[in-house]
Amino acid sequence: MTRKYFGTDGIRARVGQESMTPEFVLKLGWAVGKVLANGHQSLVLIGKDTRISGYMLESSLQAGLSAAGVDIRLVGPMPTPAIAYLTRTLRASAGIVISASHNPYYDNGLKFFSGDGLKLPDSVEMEIEKRMEEPLEVVSSDKLGKAERITDATGRYIEFCKSTIPTADALHGLKVVVDCANGATYSSAPLVFQELGADVITIGASPNGLNINRDCGATAPQRLCDAVLSNKADLGIALDGDGDRLIMADHQGEIVDGDEALYIIANGWHQEGLLKGGVVGTLMSNLGLELGLRRFDIPFERAKVGDRYVMERLMAQGWRLGGESSGHIICLDRTTTGDGIVAALQVLHVMVRSGSSLHELKQGMQKYPQTLVNVPLENRIDLDNSAPIQTAVQDVKSSLQDRGRVLLRPSGTEPLVRVMVEGEDPGLVTRYAEQIADAVRQAAVA
Image 1: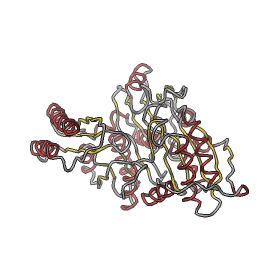
Image 2: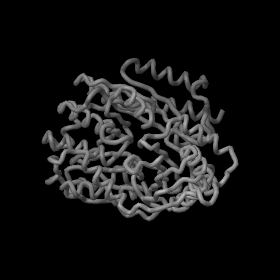
Image 3: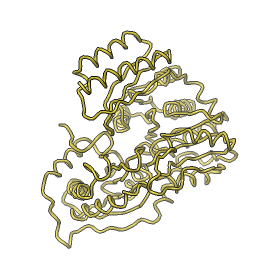
Image 4: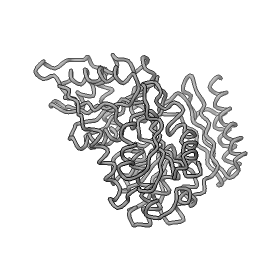
């Protein structure tokens, strides 16, 4: 069945439109409460990022859950992975994050975690959508949910993050720039690295409700690169607005993306005998990652784009490590979702144990030139059944043969189509990507 509201990562829209209105979110809170409570008094955790709309949506969500008879615990601005962790440790029925992740401040969204800290399965999302079509019925006054605020949530999460690397792996002597994207990690990320001994220079940690992800963080890493060079730092760490993505910079100011970070962690764990199986990437993962892992006989599998699908394959295979080139990295023996801080700590763990710089560690993976073109669309089009689009794709595939890849997919969170072409020659790769993108644009207006 086609989902009406849920995308690949919860629900997301422009504030004041579609599914990001107070009325919709109140009804959604009620529907979530009815599905997850299942006739019993339950507890749901609510966190948010630093968008100004978070106040409005938090109140609506809280009212809907209360109307369904669900108790609420509020933690305020906290990273998405922190909500997954706290949902488990507080034995809550579910966790909800009010965030649009890497999107601008005028968008917002809702992400959901089950009681075990995992993204909700499709079947539960469909059940919630089905409840949305029913009239809202408030439980009797004596069964209304109550709300309380948790005051030590940040400290709990900081201690958890620090526990994900061995105590012996102190970061003394490392100068690190941390870019918090003016988002949910502004109060936790700098403290994690400071308390482990690093000399931390913090940027992007002055949220005002409107500047989340603006020219900073994992989606705009040039500021991080510049700060690493100007401060003569050993490396830089950029997180996105809700803290589940990681992009790094080495001491030369060169970007280290999610594929390279994943390669470094996998190789380091493999050398220590900690990997336990293979690595899951996605259809967008660079071919260089696959080839780099192959040199160490590390199995590699591609999942559909989206960290929930990476998680599905990890659990099916019984593996521990997976991620996306965008920086979502899942260390499954440590946490249950993508966590930028935890992933950064795993890279630092490899650096400390090997005595190598970040620049040296990434050299084992030679990235293939890859061009990604985002094509905005007014309306969705059927990519598979558009003859001009498929002809353009087949022409490029025939030219690349086995020396590259083509991927064409609609975004699950934004109204656009992503065109990715990968190959040996950067000039040809760019030309081929634009060639397919032009076919998509022409089909959209036909």
